[in-house]
Length: 370
Image 1 (cartoon, one colour):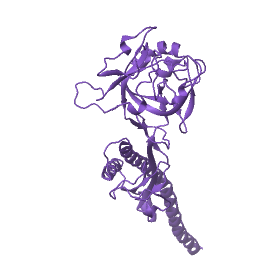
Image 2 (tube, one colour):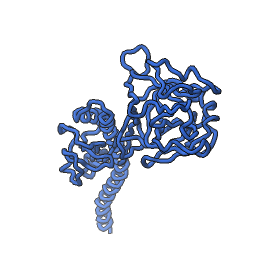
Image 3 (cartoon, one colour):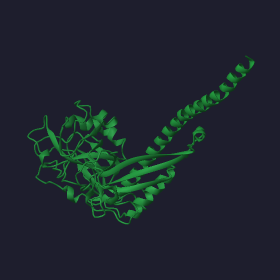
């Protein structure tokens, strides 16, 4: 009897040991699972940042800045290190995120895709893919033979013509009509000089030509003020609290607001943005409408405008809208009672990207697509 009980107790010991190992293994899996999830998020955030870094250099390249594959690689390497990735693979893509060969053709084969750091930017490159990895050690996982894990994440960021953003509720026609309606179409979009960021001047304004853009009627009588939020005559609020607008692509038709009321309402709020880059929709010849009420504008792209000031006067010729003919030029004629003054600039920001080309003063967007 005594011997039988001792034998039973002896059998319980290995069973208990096995149960403890299973319990520890289960706890290890739960704890390491949470740890792995946290590192996966870090790897994803890091890959997103690396892809955005590469796309930002491509955006500068698209905007006319002298950039090379080495610049793309250096920017991505720097951000990879800052985000504690152990390594990443970079590939060039087009604006929709498809891989490109070194010759610029699309390919479905990763092995045939042009790699960042191989020496050249393929023709048509508007994006980069970053596949980042982060290796991390385990704590309890060692008990079950898993001393480390590797988290892998994939991101694609593209650069191109901006198709949305926080807009100032005005519109610039590609040929701005003179306010005294003498038939002068002014300086067309292709002749708008693009200013550079401030260089060695004492002020902080861009280096280049400052323009006065008249806020006046187009040939058909409509005023160049947009209704971006669907509520009429709240223009000051649209400037102070601008709605985020995203268009799938251009061209797009946008409703006008009551310009004569809006100009007076907007001045103070617009001038609070002095010294900032504002995004302004640009329309083509279809902006000329048949009347001033319920007009629409055919928006074709987004311009980036470094704002100096807005001025409005109740009729007559406004001296603040005349310029001096040299450092401050009017885009079209004289006679404007309302205007914006500032510089057209090449501007890169986060925002939705379309497939169209970047033209003139068009703003450039950076967008994660994966």
